Amino acid sequence: MDYGNLLSRSWRVVWDHKFMIFLGFLAALGSGLGSNGNNFNYTADSGDFQNMPFVDTPFTPPDPAQFLPVLGAMAAGALCFAIVLGIVLWILRLTAEAGMIDAASRLDAGQKIGFGEAMSAGWSKIWNMIALNLLLFGTVFLVVMFFVALMAVTVGGSVVAAVAGGTSSGQDFAEIAGPLVALGGGLVGLICCLICGLAILAIVISVIYTFAQRAVVLEDRGIIDAIKRAWQIIRANLGEVIILLLLFLGLGIIVSLITAAVAFPIGALAVIPSAARLMSGEALSGLDVFLMIVGGLALVLIVAAIRAFYTAFESSAYTLAFQEFTDKKLPTAEIE
Image (cartoon, rainbow, N blue to C red; front, side):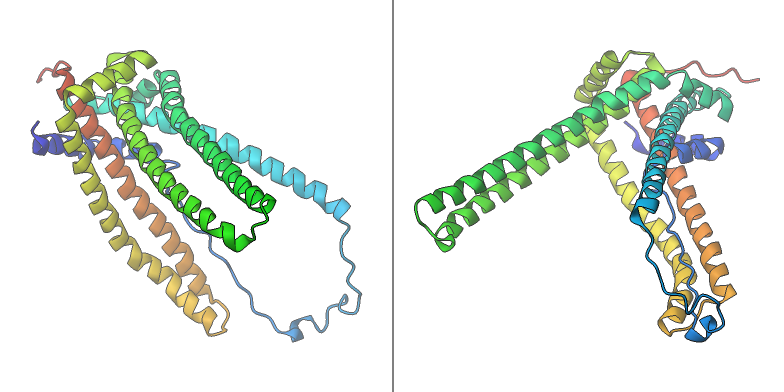
């Protein structure tokens, strides 16, 4: 595989068709983009309250029976809203991912496609994308939960058994501390091995998911068939797949460093003046608030733009790699 040509074609697909960046933004939703809220502080002295009519009124704490049901209802409503919003963003992300795959394939072949067509193509595969996501990553979640439960039962049972055995034989804590420390050391080693095993499993599942997505979108395969197809491609091109993963690992680190280099000065400009004023005991000025708001918005937009472009670029590269692995080429558009 000519990796330079692959990256160059992927770059052109995204750079020459800016709607791919917006698809990348939608696909990156829920993956860490966000902004930190700004706190507005108001400083006041006791003189501000001297002339208020309620100063001499004794404070009566509110009855918990009155405000707890309201707080409970608000918390339940916020939780329901967060769940619904999360599901909507998840479906939107999967739609955008499928749309990017279809668009990258067609654009590289010289065909014309717009944002609406890409989203429509992604929506047509949404049920298979949802099922694939749940099946693969749901499996990882269940495996993790199983090992967490197993470790909790093992550790708890071992500690209880050791303590109970020492107590029944008349030993004090100092005598049973040694076996407990040895048990703890062994369990730490076992946990480290399990974490490494689960990390490898998560990586394998992620790679299978990446190629299975493209089998669903580009070859119109069912869920199980797409997973089998992805595994077949990975086994047949294992060396090239590993190189591709390492390549994007390195590119991801470079992009993260560039993002940090760009974001740090903006964040410092937005935060440091306000922090210095607060540390000196002064109230925030209008300029401080303005800098925090504008700086925060600029920081979010810049980080989102970089992340969106990289997401679209990486997705396009894997799509073109999938087509090279499978020798699946769309007919090139006729030159007018």
